Amino acid sequence: MRLKKILFTVTAVTLSTLAQAADITGAGATFPYPLYAKWADAYKKATGTGLNYQSIGSGGGIKQITAKTVDFGASDMPMTAEELDKNGLIQFPAIMGGDVPVYNIKGIASGQVKFTGELLADIYLGKIKKWNDPALVAINKDVKLPDEAISVVHRSDGSGTTFIWVNYLSKVSPEWKSKVGEGTSVNWPTGVGGKGNEGVASYVQRINGAIGYVEYAYAKQNKIAVGKVRNREGTFVEPNIETFKAAAAGADWARAQGMYLILTDQPGKTAWPISGASFILMHKTQQKPENAKEVLKFFDWAFANGDDMASALDYVAMPDPVVNLIKAQWKRSLRDAGGAALY
Image (tube, rainbow, N blue to C red; front, side, top):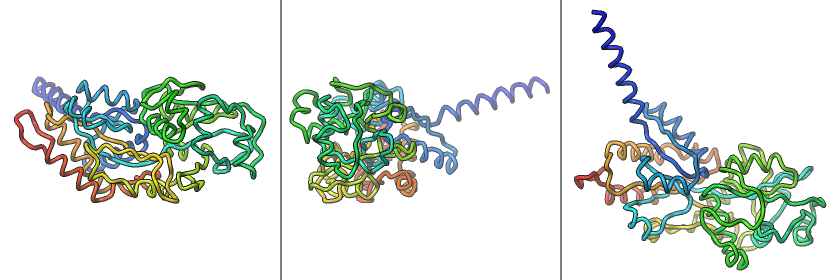
């Protein structure tokens, strides 16, 4: 009897371990991490299935999904249709939001400092070195900017947040485009690097005179001062869910080959100019089809139930017509090794 009891205990532990192993694994972008964490908590309470998401940056997410070490990867830099085909992947947007410039200037509150894209590029090129530079003073006449050095903070890891930021700078500054360019990582002309949105936010909070860029949820959660930016229509706008929605309004996902779409510098009087989407990457042919089905169940649930949670963190949920396009792609493209559809 005692032997049976021991065997039962071992079996129960083994089953528990197997149940834990069935949790979904993902890795990549830090940009959507606050929302994925919130979705994951609610989803586990609703279904019992957990999500182990590693917030390691978009570059790391692409590497891990390519190596098939996770069930899905996440990146804020979309892959081109050619790149997707080469690696046997599909991608779909999960959420939209915005990069924001954050600063730490003693006595100056959030929303008081205004920037243009050209000025942000010149700061990150190391050309504008002080807060009271005449070019900054000219558009901030109602704010007394100090005679203080600007400490530039950027990402040190491969990052989709960086891609959105430098893609925007490349669009508004020919000098930035020719000297630095765009990508998940670049050769920064100046500044100190922080790992993840968390690292950049931490540096900006600690360094007087610092400027950095983070996904808006990190600025909001950490109560860091955020600057206004002039959009392509000439309006200085604040980052918030309404200005992110305005930037997303013109996004034509139906015509986007491989769902490749970049939302920086979009038209619209109230559009936030440094907006972007965050994408999920999965293999077209799944060696672990049950895991893939769990991933699809999670995002299916998130699209149906996660809009309010997204809005609470100032992300823009994917509109219903886009969700329908995504689900059609799942049906069309995702297969097990035998060719059977997974959705």
